[in-house]
Length: 304
Image (cartoon, rainbow, N blue to C red; front, side, top):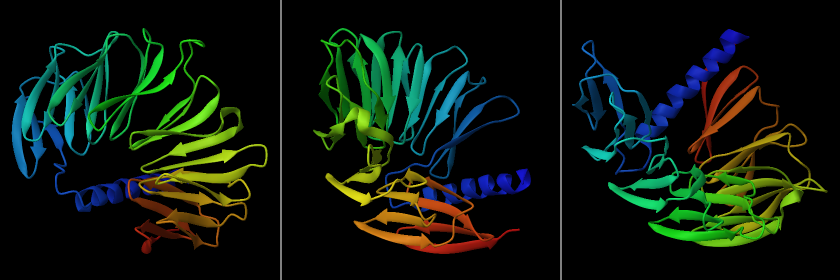
């Protein structure tokens, strides 16, 4: 069994890499890097190698479009769009997505967006990052805020309660419980209240989609491209979101996908496993290793 699980993980990695290099995103750089035998750090981008450091890195995070790292002296830098950006002399912490990087310097929060660094707050309490959105709690204003599409938005005024509710960040969407106890969604610059926060039994956010189970009836609901609808009357066994879709095992152990405003049954047999990443789902059923992408299912291999 451990060997079989290892095979699944390796195959998932391979498929994810293939998806990255074949995605319809002409602006993507698809960055990686290596350290040679002399400890020189060389970045591989668009088929070319470029040396950026001559000493080992202290830390790093690689996304599809950028490499963020602390150099050997602790300086924080980002390689993006074929250029090395000197962002800060240090970083207390940092997070990187495909399109944004967020870094804290003690209580200061900055965002790196398309080659530009912008200060967000000097009174940081906590922060979250998605591909297209940064969410943070400003401890001075007692306000939950978001950075999206180069603009700053106020999500919730917590001055009276002085507490921040639960926050879940997808790639371009945010679900959060406000100071009044309601679960809200921030999407495309707008905030919409969905239900009372204590009724949310579980929740997952992807790109353009939030899926959740609402008590007490445990119905399965989705917020999809700005519309709220019920997907199933009964709570699914499990569910996972991706880019504009949700995959789930329903109460009958059928594997289903909701995509492009339609629900489809991918397998009437209970899957051995399934995982979602970006635009695809990989799953195993009855010794067949398969991938679902853009509404199509492909069988890749038979395993035993």
